[in-house]
Structure formats: C-alpha cells, structure tokens
Amino acid sequence: MSRRPVAQINLQALQHNLARVRQLAPQSQVLAVLKANAYGHGLVRVAQALSDADAFAVARIDEALALRTGGIVKPIVLLEGFYEAAELPLLLANNLQTVVHNELQLQALEQAALDGQLKVWLKIDSGMHRLGIEPAQFDDFYRRLWQCSAVLPGIRLMSHFCCADEPGSDRTLQQLAVFTDLIAGKAEQRSLANSAAILAFPQSHAEWVRPGLMLHGISPFIDQIGTAHHLQPVMRLSSRLIALRKVRAGERVGYGGHWQAACDTTVGVIAVGYGDGYPRHAFNGTPVWLNGREVPLAGRVSMDMITVDLGPNAQDKLGDEAVLWGPELAIERVAACAATIPYELLCNITPRVDYQYLL
Image (cartoon, rainbow, N blue to C red; front, side, top):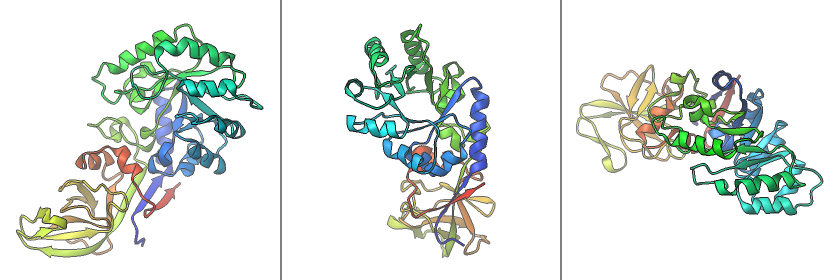
C-alpha cells in the first residue's frame, strides 16, 4: 500500500478519447497538444500511448526535446515558436516544426544559414490578442515566408479561439470569419479548433484540429463533465485514510477552526494536501469519494492532509482508499469547488505523487 497519493493514468481511456476526436472531426488530422507535461499526465508516456495521433504540439523546446529523447519520432510543433535565432539549428537537427507569430522570428528565419529547411506554421491573431501577427501583416508575412530559403514550401496557417468554451458567445464565429476572409484563395492547410471548438464548432475543424484537455477525458465547458461528450477520464488521483477522529457537535477542525461540526460525527484524515497538488482553496463541502459514497471536505486543506466529515455512523477504516478525482468523481466538480479550472488542478500535481500507468 502506497504511503503517497497515486495518480493512475488509464492509457486505454486516453486512446478512446483520441478515437472520439476522430469521430467528431473525421476529415481532420490530429495535432495532439501535450504541453505542461501532457496536462500533468506524463509527457512521454502519453505521447507513446497516442501513437495514432498525426503529430504532437508542445509549448516550449525543452518539452519537444524530452519527447525526442523518449523516442518519439512523429512531427512535433512548438506552439510558442523559438525564442532566439540560436535555437534554429537545434530545431532542424531534431526535426521540430515551429510556429511563427512575430517579426523577430521571421527576420531570424530570413537571416539563418541552415543546412536544411524548417516546417513553419504562421499564426494569425484573429481576436485572441495574445500571440499571432495582425491581419494587416498577413500578406507581407505570407510572401516573405514563401521566399525564405530556410522555410519548407507549404507553410500552414493557424489561429486560436478565445471563447470557444462559451458556445453562446458570438466571438468564435467572428474570429472564424476574420481568419477565413483573410486567407481566402490560399491553398495551405489550416488549424483553428481546440478541444472546445472540436466539440462545439464543427465548421472550424479544417485540415488540423488541436485537442488537448479533451484527450484526458475532461470537458472544456465550465458547466459540463467529460462523460457528457462520451469521453473517459484518464487520471484517477487517490490516497488513503490515515486517521479517524471523533468530533462533538460545535467542535472545530483544522487551521483557523474553519469548519464546525453540526452534530457528533467522525472526521477522517486523508494523506493528500496542497504539497501534492490538491487545491489549497477547496471549499468546505468539496466532495471526496470514499467507500462508495461522497464525503465532504471539512476544514482547510493542509500541506500534507485533508479532513472529511465521515458522518456519525461511519464504518470506514484506516487504510481505506479515497478518490480525489477520477471515474468515480469528475475533476470538473472538484475544480468548481475550488473556484478554478481542471487545467490548473492537473498542472499543479507535484513530484510527491506516484504515477501508475494502466495499459
């Protein structure tokens, strides 16, 4: 029995979710987004399990190099591109593709003396106002990239939606119209759709889709869970009950006496805390799955422990497994109880947690 929290990663569920992406976007190639340690699931192991993806995307070059070191040979795209010209030979040597989103990157490519050519994705700011060239810059960038000797012919065109996770918003259709009008007549392959757009905006799928969160079985929509979209949760985070305490009505539990017992009850202590990545600001009442039922968080989250109200007739025993999120308890619900999003919970998991990969 592990003394540490355990994150079980179900690789069959991961593959199921990739197949679900292909059902939703059957005419598109899949650029699987694995940034931030594959959303906390383990970069190389997830890439190995997603061997049916057409290519992978990461944010930064160190993530791409970790994939290459781990034996991944499929195309890898740097979503933030390169930071300085000195990185270009490294990109070429490792067969990495780069996004171009600013003038300095374009100039570096134009001035580069490389032994080969790089595959480039040109990012257009259609309304996100984060990365990407202005629409007014498109014709100039497009022409210069086609003329650049360091760039492989056949650049790809991309943009990113800011409100695709709000299906009622008109911003996504506005961005799609800006992008479509701008590149009219161009034959290059396109990529716009993230997880939310794959689910809610099929007209945005184009030649490449970019699923990230949904590959891990999680809904990108704040009021839904992944199973509503026929996705399967990939991570199951669990720990163990390490203490039982009888608490009388009116007594308080935890730092600051943040929770007060309404009646005589039993409080259970579970070996997980913000030092493991469990959300520090989870509210009283946040559910935990224990012995076939939900029990509520009772008191503030500590570095190494949480306390839950087991009820006055509790039959739970030391060593019983508690599930913090997983198939039994949707991570979307836990995130809502901590006033955050599932992305943050996944990315905050620390090295104190043991990972187990289920084939």
